Amino acid sequence: MQHRTDPRLLDAERLIGERLGDRRLDFDSMLAVSNIYRAATAVRRRAEKGVLSEFGLSWGGFTTLWVLWVWGEMQSADLAEECDLSKGTLTGVVKTLEKRGFVQRTAVEADRRKVTVSLTDAGLEAIEQLFPRFNLYEGEMVGDLSTSEKQELAELLRRVIVAAGSR
Amino acid sequence: MQHRTDPRLLDAERLIGERLGDRRLDFDSMLAVSNIYRAATAVRRRAEKGVLSEFGLSWGGFTTLWVLWVWGEMQSADLAEECDLSKGTLTGVVKTLEKRGFVQRTAVEADRRKVTVSLTDAGLEAIEQLFPRFNLYEGEMVGDLSTSEKQELAELLRRVIVAAGSR
DNA sequence: TCGATTTCGTTTGCTACCAAACGGATATTA
DNA sequence: TAATATCCGTTTGGTAGCAAACGAAATCGA
Image 1: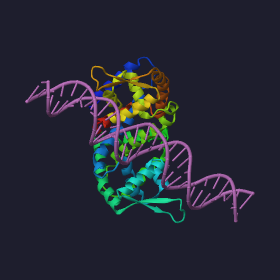
Image 2 (image 1 turned 60 degrees about the vertical axis):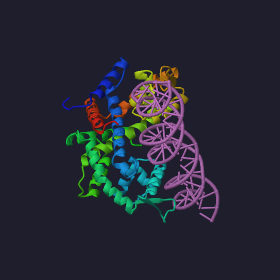
Image 3 (image 1 turned 180 degrees about the horizontal axis):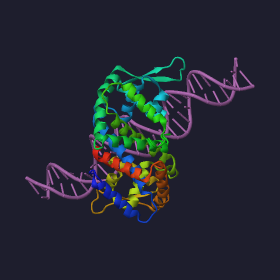
Image 4 (image 1 turned 30 degrees about the vertical axis):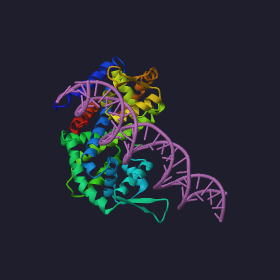
């Protein structure tokens, strides 16, 4: 192992092996999956306590703003899909973002069941200020990895996403 | 790229690059971090809809049961730490597990502020039935990866966890 | 054209999650 | 030993998240 790591993590892993003894167990898969989850939690918490808290945004709120910035005004269902949220959850997130004045809803005349969501001026300003700082945080979170390791990590995860099936 | 992946994922990534144009942007870090989050979400959802739903357990509930199984009876604060949950959240999770009859609380005589949590017989039976099936699911979720790739993934994530700081 | 079906976003009811406030119990210190 | 501080788990108030039920609107069939 050519890089320093927190030795406590490996200790815990070894201990688990001892406790489970001779049970048949796919240890490699277990560690890969549980580390995905722990890493995601750590990364989300750090982002929410750091950059995002200054704008009163949750991870989901930031994602929504980001998607609207990149893709522009979107219909509600597409936005939920792109943010990887259920439509019910998106209603709540958009409601919160509306309260903060970052997004607005617009009824669609052609089909009055539909609603589009778009950034307000304040929302545009927020995401333009926020994104560079968020991207710096992202860099810190994977700062211990080389460029090729980051790419390798992203690629391995891409395959997990496909295997798990995002829906 | 020697493995098949969902081409839609890479398309979306390419699109983002186009939309952001010439903004300075750490693309590799962004993809690594966002894929960590998406993979965790996908993996959690699939587990909760599959194995865990049969026992009426959330991811957090399963984790708690698992930790109690491996470590045995624990004091509430240590359990929260080990499950990577705030103590307030743990109170709620344990409450739910109590309702299901899987765990029990015990007051500590020596220090009456403290409470220990342990598996009931039903809880022991549940986790012993559940774990092998959960482990199979874990295997499926990373089934597209070779053993050394799983280990590589776990190791890269371990370094992210340390860099992000789990608290 | 009008009843049935489908398709929207929202609402509802639930669990999960956090930070911060709380209140009881233990430690500390004057 | 009495006042103070600290340490526990719980509660509170908020957002987030899902599935399923819902109501309004559009579409389809006959």
